[in-house]
Image 1 (tube, rainbow, N blue to C red):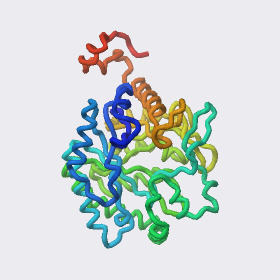
Image 2 (image 1 turned 60 degrees about the horizontal axis):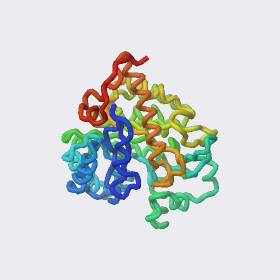
Image 3 (image 1 turned 135 degrees about the vertical axis):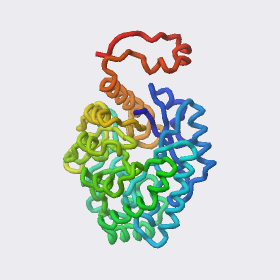
Image 4 (image 1 turned 90 degrees about the vertical axis):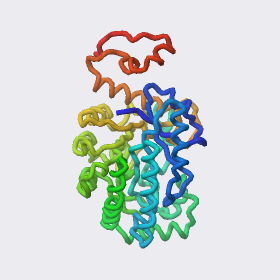
Length: 370
């Protein structure tokens, strides 16, 4: 496992020089966020992104995400052209030296929250979701209020909502199978692993079907192809919103199909209602999540995912400030070390970096982890 965090490129208020100060951070997860779904990614753009990351002593560990065009998810006559563009994007990412590409199969909207600032008992605020907030709201108008989706016209959104309603859940499964049949050989050929993110939250939203929601769904995706490139982004916060999902058991079931991990905590407040909280608190047992990842030999990138607004920070959108993501990643790093490094020496990771030790004038000190 190696620790990563998301960076939204040169315009991100959280700069790489800030992220690299998080202890033991090794990699960055990023993408070309100004490009529209369906555009082939230019190789020179990805190369410049990689160079920016590597200039700070970090690695471009994963691409999150290459968006899948609605024509592919809906299975329209135009999908094969968009699939070709997607293959070219994967090949360009591979030539830049990155082997993990995240994607999702959610119709129209990705992760969805109904509140951007839910007060928590400690005085911080977190992103929240409550199904009750959506009652009586027109689906198209609700989608238009979401960050990143206001560029779509009401007419386009209405057409898409109607098209996905006609397609239904089984139709989405069929288009996912078609996508994987078309994409996995190309991904395998260039050494890229595709990491499907679960639906967030893991239930139908605004009348739109959602299918990647539980253990049975994840197993169905795995059964679509035995190709090792067919894998998952395991997201504890997404799947954990449903209390019926046993996260450690799901991790053990998926095993080496987990190529990427998002680990965050949520506080469930009732049926289909939750708020994102500090990583060290909440309804999810992240110790057992990390233990299960260690047991299956997870060796991919892991990030702390979203964070709260704390200490008056206002840079970046909700969920993507620096402070709480740094705290969360440090907490997860400590859990991982306690699980996997019992009986080893303190500071062993620093022994592999003598330049760091020399720069700070430190000496490794002996002492077993209790």
